[in-house]
Image (cartoon, rainbow, N blue to C red):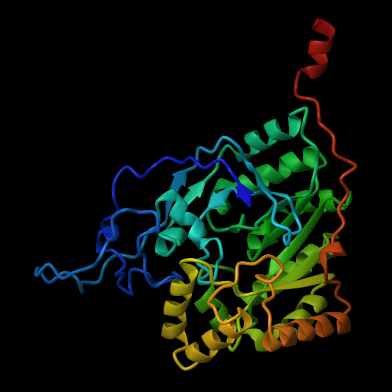
Length: 382
């Protein structure tokens, strides 16, 4: 279970496009992943589009804008007790993600904020500009004990907004000063901006980077992850990071039957050739609103494969759209899930890629609390 203080400022006014409910004109959502923007499950009112007789419902609207909202959370480190996740604490500088990946398992969390897990998730982003200060305060607390901090496990820390806000770099700089280990997952080439910090931390065995590669096909990637880096750019990012001495792995996630599962071996080959040392995968999960959002996308993009894909997923989920049970939710069960697991294990082994939770072993012993500016002067004035 993830624990995180959750307070945020609210919108000053309602976006006119919200009033259209779950109907979103194709031109308005161009470059977005979700097809609809249905009300979150905690909202008491449901929005429904209807023709008011004025003849405007089919008018071409302006593109859906991205709105940044200040998140006033008082803490920055989230804790996790799930037995099948290899980290106990994480940092998420953003809620929502402009990459717009249709399969993103973090989409349902937007409902807790009063937003839709659909288009709101990728267009109404909460940012934490005080993240670095909150992190430094947490690391200086006398009772803090270092454990690897995971970043990018919920939403991408290097999504487009960070290009101007730079919150992720500020966080990394704090971790560097405290010699605190961090594990990063991203599908963005923006991480190369921080290669200087990452290289310094890698020299002390304090960082590991995993690049998510869902497909090597540019068109498929653009349909699934409309605002993420292209596959070629991600492989190049793996190469650049590896050349800089930063330990890297490839995350094939999610594996979607009948859509991208045929690419497992090719992705691992490309990642190995780019210098990756480790590999992991996750089977597509469809919790809560994602099952509807993904089905809408699948039937729109792959009408000839939709029934087959969903059928295979249910076969691997005990006949259901989703299986939330620990140790099963990431891999699935049944013959097809076992086949994917065996294929991945054999492909990784043949390419010399490590797998498993023990593949990453960062150093916790170097953690230190650096002196604040003026601490030495205070010593003399005491």
